[in-house]
View 1 (tube, helix red, strand yellow):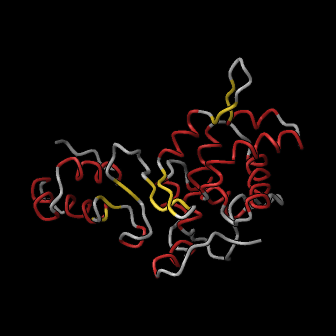
View 2 (view 1 turned 120 degrees about the vertical axis):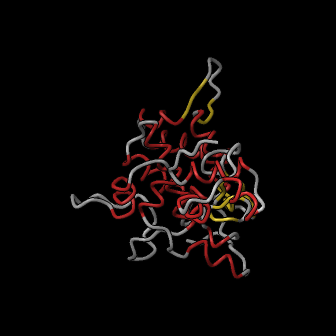
Length: 228
């Protein structure tokens, strides 16, 4: 097996560095901590992990984080974990990468792989992630398409995630503040701390040279509900 070609730039080491807590990953992907923990570690009933187990740490890497987002989408569509796990194993083999859901080839070839897997191992539950028309044309379900739309790819990998969509200014990018969620390079946690310390949105805008929407996006992402 080979991994993605992540190059030699110093920041690229962060792609596989375990730095995100399970709780943070769950919040970013809008799911819950218990589910992500189960996906990462597997169950005591002998169920194997759904995500990569490249280390014994409970922390997740940036590439793991992207896979959490995709697994969360598939689960929200009712695709059983056993089928997601099998699809991932199949993609690892066919795409020759340890993190297939973070690879551009999953966006471009994943639908074909799922259909191929369905022929090899018939299971109607896989169809939850697929839609078809009267002419037999198959496509990703709209929720999967929306998830792909949150990702910017470069060099065959997701390198920027817009976790609340492209209309929201928050991004997660391993090249910017070490992959911390940020708005125009300013960590969302820093904006939250300023706001909770009593600074007005106008003060924060001036201090960080942002606009009001940037601050609102950051605070909302951090779980606050500020008024304009």
